[in-house]
Length: 503
Image (tube, rainbow, N blue to C red):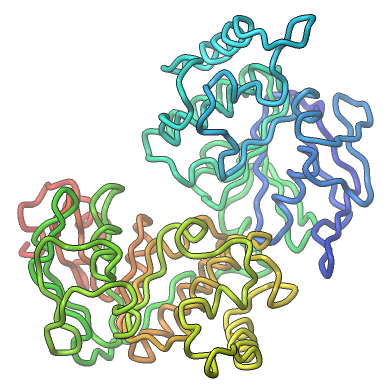
């Protein structure tokens, strides 16, 4: 790693209506290093990176690239300078080819301005081969896996000879194998002298991959440290301004009657013979690897999918398998795995998202009672500490943690009896995670039945009273008390024990 910065920002300030996103931020990236940028949602990480990538123009400060002052006016201009931002939400056109996506906005043309397809394919193939990609330039991007699509984005670094590559939460949708492949690619880029900015909420990744860490809080830099000279506790303290004394919150055991019992539930090709119960005041964890059938199973309970067989007993009486509307009317709530695709209408404000499933509750004849909606919005904005400029601010402009809180508000205002949380803390910072863990304990303490699906083993162990392990569409273990350990969960989902719950 060189000690010479390839990119330096000095005193960068950026304001939006009602909020200062960046306040006198200084930051540098060296050749051949992986530099982590961490902070809670809303700390200013993405805003700073969007300034570097030409998506936002700063209100003050200076950017130096290769020692020279620059003004980055657009993403294409940034890319041509050698600054590449790889978004968490991939910015590819699925109907175009790999080659067309790599050079999107800068397709090669001949003297007459006609697309030079031969050069486009040749140059794209060279970029793909430099990264060891196992697919060619003519593949339609929409046919590729998420990991392969990410490699198409990274191939732009080769195509445009990028010397700064910014990764924004790159492993959010990747399997462990795909993550290992990505890390190998990042290390290869580092070996080529590229400066890497790595944004992630996952501390294990930060400490495995990076050379330095810069912490942002409320739009200001809290410090930059060498990764080898610090630990996760110190970084967390810098991020949230306090130590995280009690990261997980578990409700006191005070179970009531069964809220839901599932018997022999099955959906062909997804899961089969699922039976369990959850009680009032209980947090039931559901752990398993990606593809185990967990999300499909809870979506079937909620009526998003239609079961092929099975019975539901709701508060002591058997009910027909419901539609989503019927499930809501019964008192069920489902916070889905993907808040952006399934949980929110991104261009609507927080108020409209909160009341959307329950509009009849706020209507008088055919007229909406906006005052009552505002009361509900204000109540949950305060209760969940949601950071927003007002009821009409589009949720697409909020941080991931605040978006997730609006998904929760949408269901809590209906006063449910059962709430199902599918990966409730995915892609959010440690402070927001702790707040949601505390909320889970509070809901159980109020007598709700809570089902939590999580791929993070410490989380599911930390919040649950009882855990079901699921693998290949079947429940393979049930654990509570002292039996709730990482070893037992791993054994169960790996099929190391034929009947782990009985051991």
